Image (cartoon, rainbow, N blue to C red; front, top):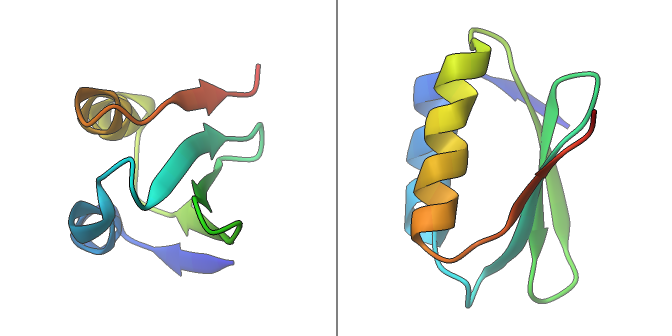
Length: 73
């Protein structure tokens, strides 16, 4: 798992924002954001300077690109 800032996470995410690459996004109870790739791979990120509202921006960006996002309750 990588720990990163929100800005770094967005910069890593933007080139991959396509349903051809990312199958699903998932936020767990511990605040780890997981990306599941279409090739079966998975990458986990702990965003250390991020509020819930900032994560909502990520959800909206992914959904806008046709990528489903789930949140553990």
